[in-house]
Length: 199
View (cartoon, rainbow, N blue to C red):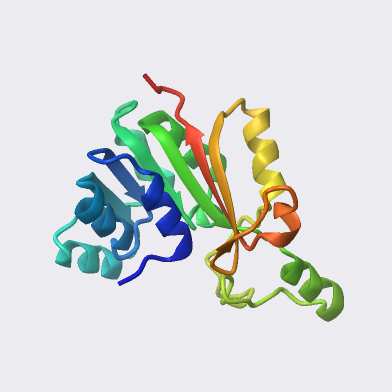
């Protein structure tokens, strides 16, 4: 089974043999890939009990938990990589979750849909309605996305907090696009950040 495009980028940039925490790991697809191809010691935290069961069924170490609450229990720098993929915008307190991620991981991957993509803008401008796209398939009333951020919002947030960016990738569909116009052209962003307790 092939990985979703953002997960494939993350998997390509995780060093072999790393300790990894995948927060909001879904059914464990990324964890399984990291275990099998990178010999990573991968652990997962997932809110949905059906996804937890699917991941455990793959032989993965996943517990049911909430990123907004349960990350505080992990020790500082306890993982080489902490990963939050397509989950930040669903958190009740995304700034606090990001802070926890940077505390417990020597490096942190964060990926999210870009709500400033031109299709989103066009839907609001010409249709006057919240967009429904391939990456944002839910309607306004049933979406898990409660914090709508853009690439430029996230870049500004990192700068304000002095968070070092070690890498960034931007996707239009499943293909990489330029970083220069990412706020307009990218549907999806992936950032690799330096943890606050990197040794």
